Length: 375
Ligand SMILES: [Fe+2]
Ligand SMILES: [Fe+2]
Image (tube, rainbow, N blue to C red; front, side):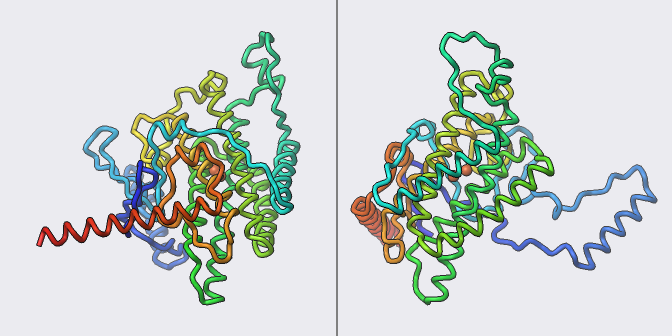
């Protein structure tokens, strides 16, 4: 598929493994192999069992070529969608922005986000307290008094929010997919962008999950929250898809606020546990980070993703959700636009789409000319 990516916005996955299905574990072969392995273990104590490739998630993400050094890896990727890749300038070109609601449904969406945020802060006991100027307190005292979060508190907050953030894109994609089947008409390129968002959010969760194994209570909380949120969003999207995209736009505004605050805290040395922490391998693979990347680099990349979701959802909410083409189906603006602008108005989306078509036509013309000259 031809995909033009100016300024390295997004690149296609190098998908050696390709699409695959999760193999069922109930096959008799699986149990036969398990029984054989157990019997062998009993008889030969010294030989450690060779783990099956099917039980190692890294097999489908990173192939270590065994030639030594951190660079000797081939990124394969079980993710078949597109990877966001950012230049260092793009990572820093993000502003905290807020869209003022003008119509009734937009006000409803903005207030629902405010309410959700308040509810979550209340339940989790989080208060954003500004440190009073001139107060000389140690890091431990600041944390004790509730002025600062420690690394575990940051992680709990992030893990919970990311487990919720992956829901809307998948619900929107599912409903638009079903609508396309049901009405036997094209979807105008929205499904793919929604799926991409859902996977991107899930990758945030997978990345941060490498830092901590949550407790059973935390998992139960997520289970309950997902059950409620999935169904509410599903119903909401059936009633008003436009309001739902606006809701996600505001939710992502909050995500940008949270990650900006987190970055500031780390850079100010207030989360020393994360200051020099290396990036998890899954993040290096996904965002194509350098081998010596740190957790801070990962958080910058995550914030850029949230900025993309903020921009895309607010822009989609400015369109006719039933008839307009998704202007971001073929390419997206880079972070210098998405980080500084809250959304495209409908007219801007139209001119961006026209620009994309021109770009593709020029590219196709160039290709056919080079094909002719090579023959
Ligand atoms: Fe996220
Ligand atoms: Fe997000």
